[in-house]
Length: 142
Image (cartoon, rainbow, N blue to C red; front, side, top):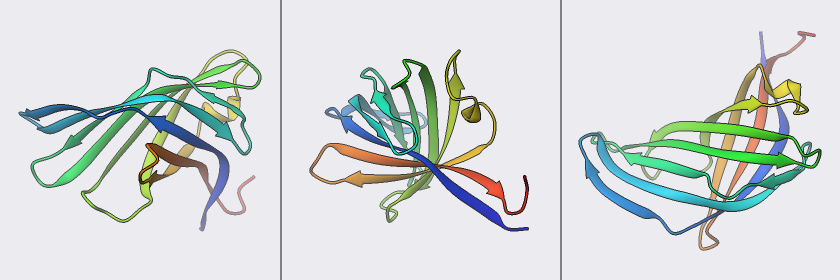
């Protein structure tokens, strides 16, 4: 069997200033506010302000990403996203993430089930990140 990845859409997120929570029992915590952005390529809409990435630098040197945010699509439907990753600090881009979607009435039903992978790329100096969202499948399966 061969796995496939189909690009579904891309999120271009504008980030706010990092809030440095500091040392906690589980590691060094930072909160990165999401100020808004756009969704393009397959799904079109906006990334709503108010989300954030609760980033944790763990004692073993790895980084844990846990982000929560909402997308308002061109249809008016809202999709809630939880996007997670664990990666080595300073790992080369892109970082692989695992987005999950909570889709309300009128939203894209194809996001309700399946396996999804995000490719997160920082845009240095621009206070932005790109997340390219792909559906993982099995070649030859209908």
